[in-house]
Length: 312
Image (cartoon, rainbow, N blue to C red; front, top):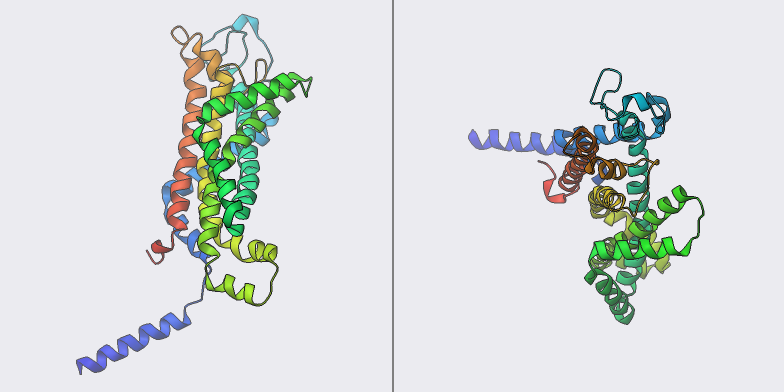
């Protein structure tokens, strides 16, 4: 009797499994990601910051460079929620405009680094042999140089070239170029390792046997199957770029006043930190919370895209 019941239960479970709709890896990953409350909350916050950056002019109560000399270094009030700086400019408005510059630099440089690193790593991993060895030695040389030293070196060389006369455009493109040329190295190593693993798979061998073009194999079969680790690494690189941009602006190699970024605001607040701490607390808090949100999202994506987490 008990064996009959067991067989019936097993049969019912097998029928349910067969009737269960199949889902792709990305659908399963999204379902697991939605269960991670910290990652979802972080994604909503990041979306909110991006919207604030896009609609900064509409959301800002004051122009970013408007000066009110009768309200210099004012502490937070109902009229100026986060106070004013040494030139009487509304700090809340400047933080909103600073989000536009900081987020734009972080996202654009991460995407440029992704393209460079993905192409470089895919070529190295797919071709193999001496070309792979040579390309990886170049990466090792760049990787051995401290990131901050290389970043400052590229920025100084670009500034010395005087390609742009506009100081804002010159500083912006200098930061983007420096972060892009530094950030692709780690992505290239990750992509190469993933390509070396995936190109041994059966479906890649089958595509080769059918005479498919190697370029088509990489684009159609290899790259879609290594997007998971790349996306996760990208979410961790964006907060790093935010920090690097803030640091460059802090030491005077980034944007300069009156233009606004979170690093510029933190640098200005540092000079009057003891007397007027609100000038550094609020920009630093914006940097901290945004970086924390990206890190939480990266952790959530890493767990969601892990095949071993399937079914949990």
